[in-house]
Image (cartoon, rainbow, N blue to C red; front, top):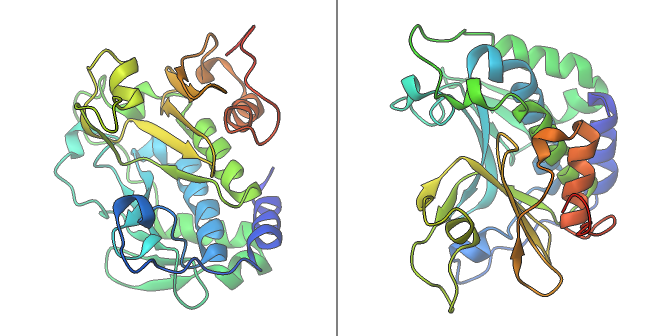
Amino acid sequence: MDVTELVATAVRNYENITPTPIPEELTPETAATVIPDPLGFALGWVLADAIVANRYHGSAIDALPVCHPEHGWDRILLTRRVSCTLCAQESADSFGTIMLTGEDAPIFIARDGSETSYGSLLREDAEKAVARLLEQVPQFGILVGEHANCWHSRAERYPDIYHAVARTIIENPGVIALREIFVDEVQFEGTFHPIYLMTGALTKGLTYNWFAVESPDYVSFFMIDGGSTIYQTDTGNWATVGKQLKEEDRDGVRKRILAWLRIEGNPDRDTVD
């Protein structure tokens, strides 16, 4: 699916969705259900996908969706902070922010504070809109140094996996994706966090190395390099997989995610799952 098709799908699926009201008592869990501008949210994922596809491996720029504790899903940060070990001290929005709310959202806020609205631009000419964004976020290149342990070097399939996640969201309202995940090392309601459990307690605290993709009924976790996966079984337990996402082509990644979320098909427990 090219960018023009993604935009058309986003408009068709999200244009008439009513914004999620903000609950009176907002918690991290309820904030994750708040989408204040559904169409801006979906179109923002189109822009984020273009950034990752064109700037991740060449400049280590990632696009992190952010759930604001008071506003819900309202922005995507463009950053190298979590993708390059040499850039760990950079600000979280060092390459700009894609705001998912506001008039004619999404709105790109550049490092100098200038703003460009992309809602109408995307609908009028999606390819031209993406080209303009890429001019605003040019290839900065990689810092001189050792990058063997950086995700932008290790996660070769990340742009394909990111595209599959973006397309899943754009095609299926109600699906959200997290990259900022807190893995608790103590039991919550009688059970450990599935990432903590399945990684042998090696992953704990705040992590940006996984996707959590959620539908209203199911959730799946997979590392950004496609090398590890956890999903919910029909009995409510957690399972790993036999064939990892890094072994799939782009469309295969999308189909596996849809099956884990029970949107299209079911996990194939006898073979890949």
